[in-house]
Image (cartoon, rainbow, N blue to C red; front, side):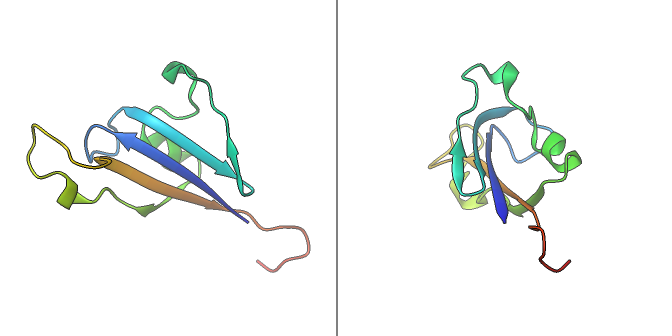
Length: 89
């Protein structure tokens, strides 16, 4: 099973603060607290340290200049794979 974590940040740096978050666990969207201080991760680096793997880095074409972002800006997509009992490694 695959869990997905979408993190929006204000830069491409792994330690940049998270501005938006969406978590999908076992195919279901998880409702997270509205208060950013209560989110499970405050940076992409924190998520990586907790076992998440980056599968997509921000699309730099959306950052046409440093003063303005276009589209989603700096969105990281991370995954965490889980094996279910009885499956292979």
